[in-house]
Each structure stands twice: as structure tokens, then as C-alpha cells.
Image (cartoon, rainbow, N blue to C red; front, side):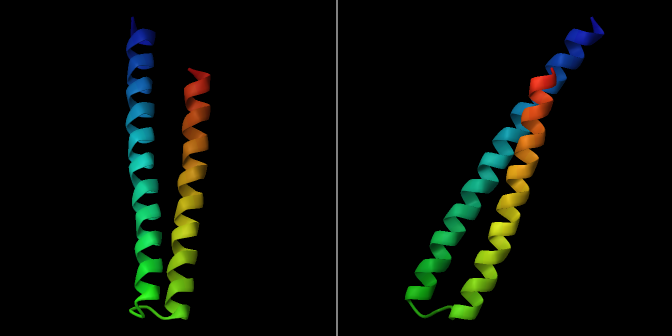
Length: 77
């Protein structure tokens, strides 16, 4: 009985994390689009654009790594 409960809890955890990661990836993608738009409107300079894009790319890579871990957890169960 405990294994079934643990499995369901793990499944809910994986689903919740996957949904949140998808949400964060979407936010990052929309932010990059907005930053590029601001650059074309001369609101941001080239150096600001590069710094912001680099930071968002790093965060996106971290999200992908977390997603890989979650997929491995899902595969184990």
C-alpha cells in the first residue's frame, strides 16, 4: 500500500515540476522576444541586450538540466 501511495506522490511531483518548468521556459522565451523588441525600439543598448540574453540562456540551460533529472526520476518509477 505504501508503494502505491509513494508512486502516486512521485507522479504528482513529476507532473507539477514539469508544468512549472514549462511555464518558466515560456516566460524566458517571451522575455527574449520582448528584449529583442526593446532593442529595435532603442530602449536597450547592445551591451544590455547581450547581458540579458546570456543570463536568460543560463537560466534556460538550468531548467533543461532540471527537466532531465525529472525525466530520470519518472523513468525510475
